[in-house]
Length: 390
Ligand SMILES: NC(=O)c1ccc[n+]([C@@H]2O[C@H](COP(=O)([O-])OP(=O)(O)OC[C@H]3O[C@@H](n4cnc5c(N)ncnc54)[C@H](O)[C@@H]3O)[C@@H](O)[C@H]2O)c1
Ligand SMILES: *[C@@H]1O[C@H](CO)[C@@H](O)[C@H](O)[C@H]1NC(C)=O
Ligand SMILES: *[C@@H]1O[C@H](CO)[C@@H](O)[C@H](O)[C@H]1NC(C)=O
Ligand SMILES: *[C@@H]1O[C@H](CO)[C@@H](O)[C@H](O)[C@H]1NC(C)=O
Image 1 (cartoon, helix red, strand yellow):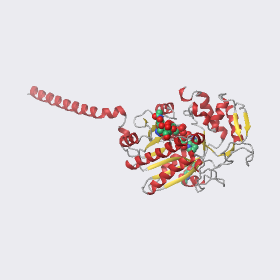
Image 2 (cartoon, rainbow, N blue to C red):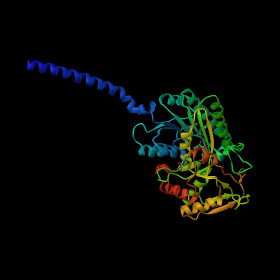
Image 3 (cartoon, rainbow, N blue to C red):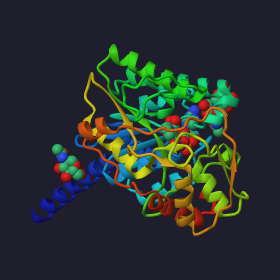
Image 4 (cartoon, rainbow, N blue to C red):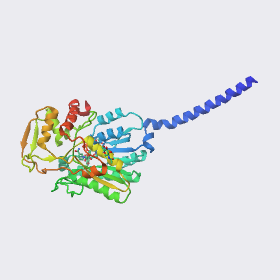
């Protein structure tokens, strides 16, 4: 009797174990492929988690945005074709946030409509930050078609994919170059946009594509017009590392660092007879950490059916001479400076009126000391003589 009871029990146990194993195997088989490409968390919306697609996330500004968004618990997909960005930056970010469902890198060309459509199909995005672009004024004058093509049509494709897949929030990287040479300073958001080079014109066209579409949809749109971006992560994890061939297109901070490192013999200041306090051009330099803070605030304030357009600058201009002095102090190198005559197409003074973003998004620039921003960037440059390939 006891024996029979035991036998029946063990039979029953065996059946349970078998059923459990089959169930486990089934789950294992179903789960496994998803686990391999890591797409489970990325392919489903999750309450309380905002999944942001960051185009150009391997680039200078995009990588800094990803760092901040990850710190703030966003889920991130980077889309970049590494034409200008750095896989090294992506690796740093992956190293900092290796947990599943935090960061995914997708190698793709935004100009490839089919690839972009698939990416939207496989992923559940809540918002898009669109940084990917070609972004050098000088290059745009030499290769206008490259700029018109890659800035406008890529933005168009992206917006189409967002519309098709119901992604309703877009933060767009625009630029003060869309204003051209306004007569009145400071520049407000209502200053007429009359861009004067293909870069500025293409960025304005991309804005128009977004704005016209937004009138026919309930998309939440934030357009941020950046002034001159400088600096890097204060903790030294990321930096600005353009490819060597783009160096000469360069922005002033890169040129200063290259001069300090002896890669170029010195700096050429073009124009000392502008109607400015010291005769050199005046620009509004915004630290990348502040700039990204503006993006996070823009994302938080984005509302369906609403468009927000904001200048992102400090509101204060600095002359080229002041910039070079700050760079000399930051690097500790007495950089050689040559003074030359004006370069055609440069305007005397450009600086923003940031009161709209101050008031509406409660954003203010904090890193407004040039020397400090440049010191931080210089520290990274010194430790990464070959950029991210070190
Ligand atoms: N740096 C500035 O001072 C400044 C000022 C105003 C506006 N902006 C805007 O900010 C954005 C980012 O600029 P950045 O300085 O970080 O430039 P960046 O060149 O460092 O980054 C751009 C990134 O986009 C990627 N990319 C370009 N075309 C692509 C494509 N077709 N498909 C996929 N990826 C592509 C590149 O590989 C790169 O990683 C740009 O839209 C630029 O117009 C920059
Ligand atoms: C990146 O995208 C551009 C189009 O914007 C394309 O011309 C270029 O060849 C791509 N580069 C790579 C490495 O895929
Ligand atoms: C941009 O577009 C042109 C074609 O118009 C292409 O030749 C170029 O490689 C593209 N990509 C980049 C990153 O400039
Ligand atoms: C605005 O930002 C400041 C500084 O971050 C903060 O202390 C303040 O509470 C914010 N005000 C509002 C209205 O959110």
